Amino acid sequence: MSDKVDATQVKSEPEKSPLTTAISKNTKILALFAIACTLAVSLVSELTKDRIKVQEQQQLLRTLHSIIDPSRYDNDIANDCILITAPELGSDKIKTAYIARKSGQVVAVAMTSTAPRGYNGNIDFIMAINLDGTVSGVRVLKHQETPGLGDKVEIRKSNWINSFTDKKMLSEDDSRWAVSKDNGMFDQFTGATITPRAVVKGVKSTLNYFNSNKSKLLAYPNACGEAALTPASTSTLTTTTPIDEAANEQ
Amino acid sequence: MSNEIAPQNSNETKPTNSSDEQEIAAAAVQAELIKSELKAEYKELAIQGLWKNNPGLVQLLGLCPLLAVTSTVTNALGLGLATLLVLICSNATVSAIRHWVPKEIRIPIFVLIIAAFVTCVQLLMNAFTYGIYQSLGIFLPLIVTNCAIIGRAEAYASKNPVKQSAFDGLMMGLGFAIILLLLGVIREILGQGTLFDGANLLFGEWASVLRVEVMQLDNQFLLAILPPGAFIAMGILIALKNAIDSHIKNKKVVDTEQVIERVRVNFDS
Image 1: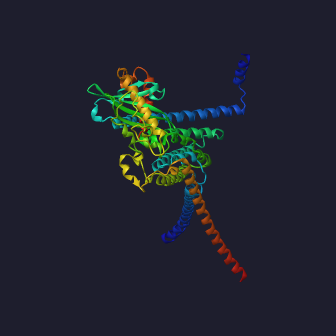
Image 2: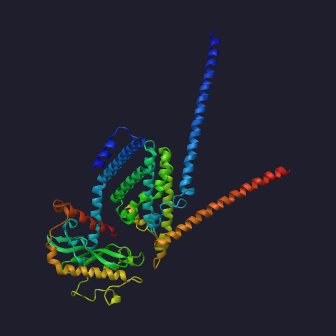
Image 3: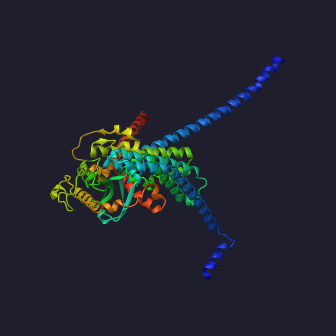
């Protein structure tokens, strides 16, 4: 205690060395610059905020349109979603599922999910599942697979990912849901079997999860849009991540 | 009388006129000198930025983004433009505040300014060119750590007026962007056989017509797409630049030798 008091007394003494005056002057200048820069950045951020949000929403909508035909639903799908965490979805992160409704009735659900153990880590994807359990479409959102080999899971490199469309699980453990090397119905790529194998497995697991938890999932409250903004800011925070991921798909 | 006065008057006015003219002429000469000096300075800046001291080929600064994002022309162009913009803005700002910044804390202040500009550019790209923002990923914020930018701030902008600094930023940025583009062209043609693939991400939907199929490849040439290909292409570009430089140098040496020969002939005779 006494030491601290001494230190403050020394500081408050009027005789300042040139070093301390230089330090305090420089500190002030630095602080001023920091404030000015922060102001500039926050101004730009404020100006671009709405536009960025619009862009993210558009991107999300474009992705959703590619897996659920826009004529099949009439609700504001980007703002109608539920949040799920389940080990079946590949990681313990919070996943978002967007719900497509036609005149109030659920038509399909677009779930973000993860296929673990790709050739180079996790593969994030979004898949739309019709209410009867058939796949409406799958898109890979984010991956680090080898360019030229494993990246054929992207729609702009190859249309392999469309081979999931209209497929269905016949049983809980349908053996057809594998790459053809494992006697399944999905092709692998020349030189890359691990990537499609991981994606098939991930899609299968997600589909299984949806089939067995359908009624429970659809009872979840809406976590997106205006309704969700009021209760807590955390829910909006978690929803922005999948939107970012969805935007990666191009 | 009047006749006498008139010439006197004219005599009186003449010298003053001529002195005025002289002054004006002197001022004009000086102004021209300054102008020509400025011109020379600008020219020198352009040569330095684009060729002699190119940040990509000679200073070898900012290699990380240079090698990582040049797998397509579009990405290269996006990063090149972003870096160019940040360089011009940061150089101009650093130059404008150079009298108020004590030299002990200039580096943190430069870093602050650069980081602020990069964040602004990032936000703007996020808002207006969302696709390219997504495909540049982490390399957009990493412009902060591009040594070329803080290098120019420290070496040139902190000692020179705003206009020249901005011009220096423009030229250095252009030099960097050109190297990015060249690498992008080489790697995209070899790797995918296309040019401007995904240009619509940068410029909007109309730009998808820019896409050119240079050659049809059954399989992508992996080496060109992966980072090692970037290193090899970069090495070839540097070697090419050095070869051109030494070629020019040899030519000059030959010229001077010829001059010396003539002198000798004169001396002998």
